[in-house]
Image (cartoon, rainbow, N blue to C red; front, side, top):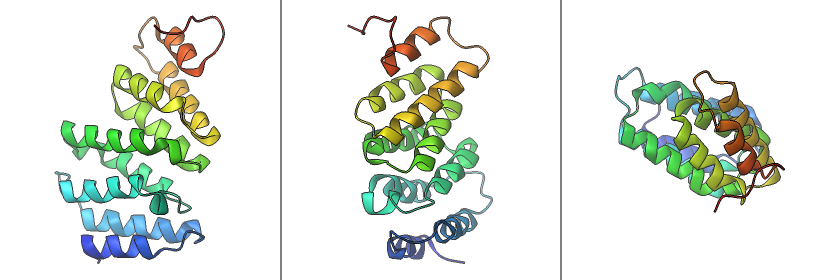
Length: 171
């Protein structure tokens, strides 16, 4: 089993043109290092944040599987760790151009954060997103629309974020 430092070295060594299965294998190693601890250590999160923040890393095919691992491990994260993860995804989303990465990111935000937090993130991400990123935001917004207990004005807010007709721009 690898250490956290060797995981960092390994992910940087994966060629950008590598097959998805290489990144998937790395994510499985990452998961094995994390183990079954009930706590999610900051060092693990910081490596994930680094991957989601460094273009040479998040552009590697299959990196969406790390987003999926974050989704699975969300219950172990503290509120501060969840905020840190969201900040990294939101701040770097404008460079994400892999459709699977964008879809998984939108899905994670919609399912793992409170509705208002997710809407604010999607609103901040949409305008500067790549075409694939816009699809990821739209998918996340669709997930929000299908959740029970949504706010009565959610549809209007979603249309505003997407720039759809029938809604005056926010002032």
